[in-house]
Image (cartoon, rainbow, N blue to C red):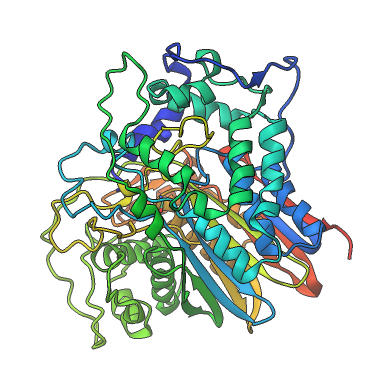
Length: 593
Ligand code: GLY
């Protein structure tokens, strides 16, 4: 579902300054204006040191994680605390009504685990439930709200790998929601980009458009209702959502969104029932694993396509005699063709074959000196791989794919024991479905727009009862000789996959340092006619790539990654974005050994 999302993300942000604000029906501002000279808090994108490290998009979330580590908590405890905090300070990307994927290295077991907290379709949803619905209508609706996974994921993560209770893990978030945080340019821009739909829901306008407009940069934003929601969640546990009072309120909101009187928006109600919430489970799954240049790369298995698509592209690249940006784009193109045909939340995804050496060789054969014709057809991961197959004529046609926005978020956390968390969390679009649950201080997700709307016979990503929409989230952990070397991930819809892949290529094939690998200009090729690229990428690689048949088109900003590298002698290098999405925050426990 990448084609139409631009409307509520990048384009919305770019158009933010021209958004017309309408007075909300209810205005009770949780905002206190501060003197105009107050500057947003500075964030550092790179930190080096010892004893544990964190990188998130947000200083408050990074500090929340570090605070838990300092009190003796482990990386999983800290990651859950940071995720809950992001629900306060990055509420348009993360929240308790969203979902996500955790890839976790357990230092004691020397083993990588994953936890799938992806949202599910209600049982009443079928393959045709989204058919014919305009994408933008679905985005802002009850229909697109999936059964939330984050709370179940947090509880499972803490039970299996953590040392503290959910109540304890929620404390930093409760504090920030109560005391408030300083509105920065990113928060302002994201609110402004969403104002046109936020004003159409009384609960959302009340919270995020106090006085009818986005809270100004430098003001303090409080969310006391979310603080209270987290407090009660800590006391009552996940059952409060999965079958209890909070669950009933979520269902009521999904079925009858609180549309502002006089709004002309056609808001479709959802299909969720309390029984869907009762049935929800977070799931531990085996990770995907490939070897690349002797290193073990672990990722997220279906329902995410992150692990399989990053993994397949790396396997293809490993076969090639040299790797540069042309090869990166072509390997990505091929692995997206296979992702589209084979990967979804269905039985029998041919993961082993998609990630096999034989299939990689067969696919790599198709990469020549020039960009291959569009679209690349999917391969045949059937286990029988011979000499290079002749390129078959392409029958399909496919519309160019516009840019995806920066929705979703990613963090990395590591602790003094050597445990490592790579965690993607999302409510799908920036701002989710735009609907705050009245009185509870959080937005609902619109994750079900990640399904294929159809009609698309045979598509592995059509909706079905209880099914999880295919994700692109790609939290990734790399081990070298069985020890953690690197952990990374990014937001950005299906560009998550290419961002993670490009950072790995930058780091290993082009020999960049990790900070340079993240900062480098990006491009994303997802089996589309044109390759989207940031201006810096076009400037740097454009002439060579266009001479080789690539067509580059501007995407102003791709991804907002976070990563950590394990340097020799126990030194950690935590890295966030220097500028994308306003820059991220990297922290270490101690700068000295
Ligand atoms: N909603 C973004 C993803 O799952 O890829």
